[in-house]
Image (cartoon, rainbow, N blue to C red):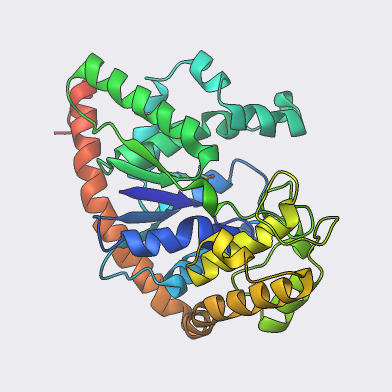
Length: 324
Ligand code: TRP
């Protein structure tokens, strides 16, 4: 199993509840690799010093959340250069047409103008395919927004296998449950994201900040507490968060509340407790950056041992002359 996370922006409650918590659970049931995809981040402008710092921070948050380097493999994408070499072989497998159909490229390129979009933004799904195929991953846990990229990965693997003989495992997406979708506290029609600081609870926010963000959360007209994302998106989001944080069902939680105030307060308290161990463990890791760097280096060694074998197979199958 393989999944990746970009080291841009801060890890927030939506990432934690929607993905990272599942990664932590999955590491015990699967042979799991998790990758901080710093090369993917370069598809948009990044300040070099910030990118470097955020890559370490992102890895530290994942460790603080419970990824255990003795159980899973956690590493930084650019530490295993085999990804980019396989990416080239896959660029020579993919077609312009199928990349043009990627909706994420269309969305992002429209924003900044396609003419000035980086070529890497266009080829990004191929690098993602390389991330997956190079580990023979058969399972890729991602959000719904990444389904198309995993489908492309499947197509590329099948085409390559057909053209050159059995080389890659064809992966399946493992899309998280719909119920795990956490939206912006200020704008409940948008996903929780780093671009909305007041509506987004960060994994490392201190308790008083979390409390304030929930207090100011947008609710809905009317005063009834009921789970109905269509007509009551704000309240439903608070119920979702409280339910996910406490491991209960949304309707079950909804029955206990008749007012918005107590629901907000309890959601805040539950999230503070949920994130407390992560914050404490993060403080220890942040005090020892060399320790985290060593963990990542070991992770890259383990990943590279697999990646180099797959890459050698792919190189041989396409007909590259072995170096004598
Ligand atoms: N594109 C993914 C995202 O933006 C990140 C990613 C890169 C990824 N490589 C991956 C996810 C491989 C799963 C598997 O969220």
